[in-house]
Image 1 (cartoon, rainbow, N blue to C red):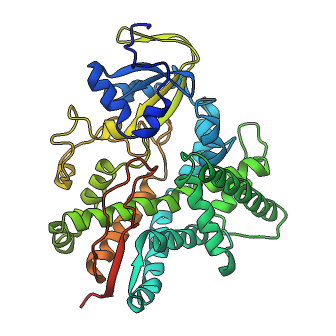
Image 2 (image 1 turned 120 degrees about the vertical axis):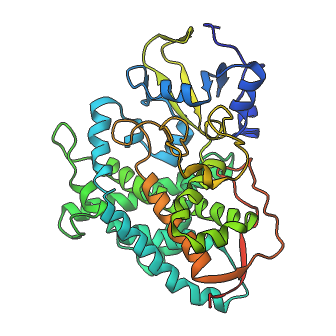
Length: 415
């Protein structure tokens, strides 16, 4: 249809749910193509993989984000009215708000807060028989993200906010009760965040001017109007949620250190190895399976017709592990990042293109900074044992992690 090969069957929703990280790339290989047409949730959809299609995907004159995400994702993971659903000048202006939070000093301040949290948590880890790393890091990052963003967080609500923020990214793609738990968490978090926004506007709260809470509460869109409290709440959660979600990358990094122990010594000997190591974790370990857009108006690309209104899914994980871009793509080789200039379309763990103009996640720098800080702590500040446990990644989950959530035992200060 329209010169684009078609996947087998009437609708591919179940196939995608069963294999979220492999469905698009595997279907493309079977059809000997970079893209194919199918239905997802009964809607006509074009699925694409690879750096060339990624570059086409980020042509904003052809593809837009408005109305592209399924409602169940909008009402759980992303919220409604946020930057992810904007296009053109409105998107670029709102993106400036987020980019203003990503200065070197601000990212370093968040890293320092997380390291302080690690120093505070480590003695408790030493006193316990074992710790579940994912649970510990989620709580730490909830505390750190709120402190950094200027969001007051009472001790009594730490566990609740941690669970709610986790539900947004961990349960959004689930079916049944877990998905509804994510939607309930979204509802409660938006009410909480909207109250904070209003308190700043009323002068009851006075966070620092460089904080996310102050910047979002006082931001004016292109029409010169303040964001509505609900939209401002969505955007505040677009700072807190992704920061807590870095806990997944951190657990995956700990998993990589365990599976590739030679890298522990390399990281101890040379701090300059930290960034290649965490970049390889971000490349090889699955996180988000795909991103969505919608065809703005009919166009042709390499002889293929894209009809107006079609949803387009870009395969993130398949692009990050595409053999046309990466040698031995399924092997863990951090050294590949030493002397390679990576294009913004072949390495897209958090979206592709330009951070300022496109929908590439500005929180990417926070993810890298936090992963480097935690990895450095794991190899330089503490020793620990990894007991027998099921460390296979659950690739049917979104995002995939070991069932055990990575258990550490006999944690002790490094001598």
